[in-house]
Image (tube, rainbow, N blue to C red; front, side):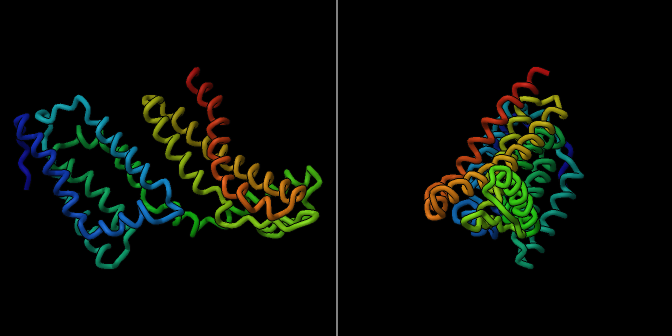
Length: 279
């Protein structure tokens, strides 16, 4: 059991590095899984840069912290044992996602156990962001992917019908006058949604640190803007398919349309951010 004693400054620095080493040693069974998540899975292309952002936020959160003033925590010690058991159980059951989330909680508890609530409060947000680097987008697509595509299809159909291009919609299939436009998994906009969601979460934390309402508003409008941008993307592909043919619409234009969503979302979010900053 950890004792509630104060550390000397030099010892606390070595202890801090030791805690980091202890954590990475503890999650050694997950290294191969993290390698697949960060470098191989195409649907989770944001994972690596989220990891880098989380690391930068982690380092930034500890700036100016005097480790010698920190106190160990009995609660953190208990939490460490509980989450370690949960992590090992999930690994034995081969439930990698639960094991990974437990590992993030384990990291929090280890720092809480050795350094107390002061460090815990500082690293809570960076570790929360780190959780979003896991393949959560794939899980959302598995659970709600079709509903998201269905909503995007209906908005796009409304736009195309106003232009006189679309005549009917069945599920995620938009029947144009000359072709059928199918909104597949890649057109759900989830990748752009994940990216913008995390960006607005991080920017809100950094810029509107003491204004919770503004942070929530920025994230909310980010999600709405991405949804509308994706519907405009699908509508644009439908217009091109109707006028220039499906081969052109499904070629390079379709491949680069994801970048279009992201860019359009950032452009539309800028005036919203400006208005939030003024208030």
